[in-house]
Length: 81
Length: 81
Image 1: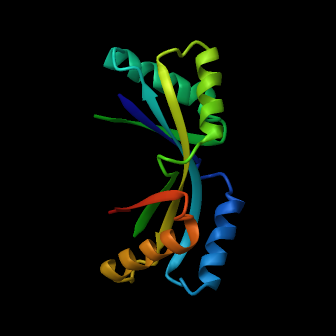
Image 2: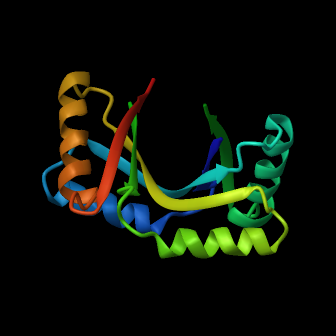
Image 3: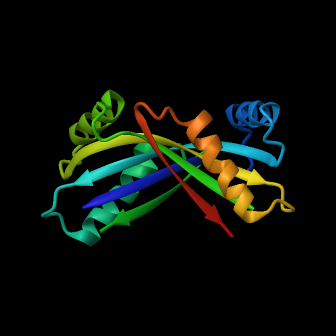
């Protein structure tokens, strides 16, 4: 079983790294790009014998408590297969 | 128009950061987690007057040439709305 956790800065939080990438891309000629925000993601492999519902709760917990900082970041969890 | 570019290390490339996260999570009691790989993603806003097909080609180009290092990384592009 595999889960993906996507972590991104909240909309209200400034993202200077994304702004730098955006301005670099525009300087390279990609003038149609108006904004870039950067995030990170985690691909998590889960032991196959794990109960699916329990795994979903646990991964949600991992995302909230460990992988994301809920003060400034949002996250979403997605299960594959 | 919005695009998301996901960049991750190729399967054959070691991911020490992911391994560290995996072992930290297991130490915290999440024993069902067997592997973690970390990647990054970019949320790119594109000027609305841009032709969709052309935008797809340009974002693919940005991903390949700038955002990812094709020697060690894979990427995938996804369009929203």
